[in-house]
Length: 575
Image (cartoon, rainbow, N blue to C red; front, side):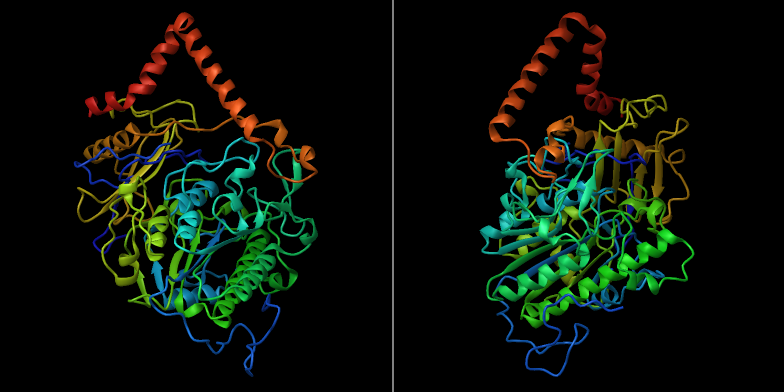
C-alpha cells in the first residue's frame, strides 16, 4: 500500500492460470487517461569449504569477517537476487510466524521491507516477469515453448553493462531447445533444475504418471554426479564457490532461485527436530525447510562479506507466489493461497538489504511489482530500460532507497483467455461484453484517491465479479461490487484498454518427444532449430486450412471469432 492507501481492483480466477498478457506500453496508466498500454498475453548449517575468516580468530558465518577494501562507490554494485519458491506471506519471522528465520529477519530489519509488493500467483509467470520486465505465461515441461527468444533478458542486459552473471537453482522457463537454456539466455554459468519441482536429494521429477526423469544440470550437461546432496545446501555451496573465484572488482549478478520451499516436503533430519512440537506434519516439514533455507541465506551473506563483495552489494529477497496452504504454507492473515488472485496468492514477501541504501531500517509501502526489478536493476548497473522501451516494469530504486513515491499506480495481474471456458460472466450482470470467466485481475489507485481497489473474479455460478477496497479491507471480507458499480465499470474498462494490445497466447500442446526416456533418462532439450521451423510452418498451414474451412462451413464459428476479436471494442462502447 502507498502511504496514502491503495485502491485495488481484481478481476481474476481463483485457480491456476496460464497468464499471458503483456504490455507494449505503460502497464500502469491512470484511469481516465489511458494510453493504450496493455499486457498481452530457510541447527546451524555450514556450506562453506572453510569455516572461518582468514587470519582471524573469529569463525562461523554468524560472525562478521574483517572486510577487504571495498570497491569504489562509483563502481556498479554487485546484485544478488534471492527467490524462494512457495514461501507464504506468514512464513517469515518478522511477520509473526512460528517458523524461525533469524537471517531473513535481520537482513530485512537492517534494510527496507517491501510491504506493498506484488508477485504472480504461480511459479513461471513471476520468474519470467523478473527476467524480462514483461507479463508472461506459464510454461509446462513438455511444451515446445520457452521464454521468447526475441526478448532481451535481465542477465543479458547486465552482461552488456560488464557484469558476470550466474544462476543457481530453479529455471522453470522452458527448455525444449538449447537456445532456451539459462546459459543461452544471459547466464555465464548455471547449476540447477529446468523443471518446476524435483526431489531435493535424487533430483527426479515426474510430470504425470510414468513421465519421470532426472533434472539437475550444470551448464548444458546433466549433473548426474551431484545427486544425493540436499538442493538448498548444494545451491548455497555453489554460490560460495562462485564468490571465492570471482574478483570483487568486476560487477557480479547472482540469481539464486531456491527450490525451497516447494513440494516435495523434504528436509534434513536435524531441522525437523526443532519443530517436533508442531502437530501438523506437513507444517512441521515445511517449517524445517524454511529454516534450512534461512541458514543458506546466512551462509551466502557471510560469503559476500568474506570475499569482499558485501560493501558494494544489493541483496534482494523475494518469494515467487503465495504459500501453498495444502502443503504447509500460510498466508495469514491474508485470504487465499498460491494459484489465486486473493491477496494471499499475490502479495509477496520482499525486502532489500544493502549498504548502499540511503534510508535503511524502515518499511516501505510504495507499490512495487515483480516486473519492476528489470528496469530497476538495469538502472543500478548503469544502463537504461523503461516503459518507453515497451516494458511493463518501472525503476523503483528511488522509492526503495530514498523513500520517494513509487512511479507505479496500477498493476495488471492477469488476462487469461484459456484457463476456463466461458460458463458465466459479467455480460448478464450488465457490465458489458467481457466474460469474466476469462481470468483477469487488476488493482489501481489512479482516479480513486485515498484507497486501493481490487477487482476479482470468483469461480462461482452465482457471482462473476468481486470488488474490494484493499486499504480499508486488506483481508478481502466485504465485497463492494454491488455497491460500487461505477468502480467496477471503470476497472473493466481498464481491462479493455489492456486487452487491446494483448499478444495472442502461445500455449502449445505437449510433445511426447519431451519424455525423459527419449533423452537418456533426464529432462532436457529435445527439438532442433530445423524441427522448430517445420513445426511453425505446419502450424501456419493448419491455421490457414482451419480458417478456410470455417469460412465455408461454420457460420457460428465466424460469429464466435467475431466476438473474440472485437469484444474489447464492444465493451468500450457499452461502458
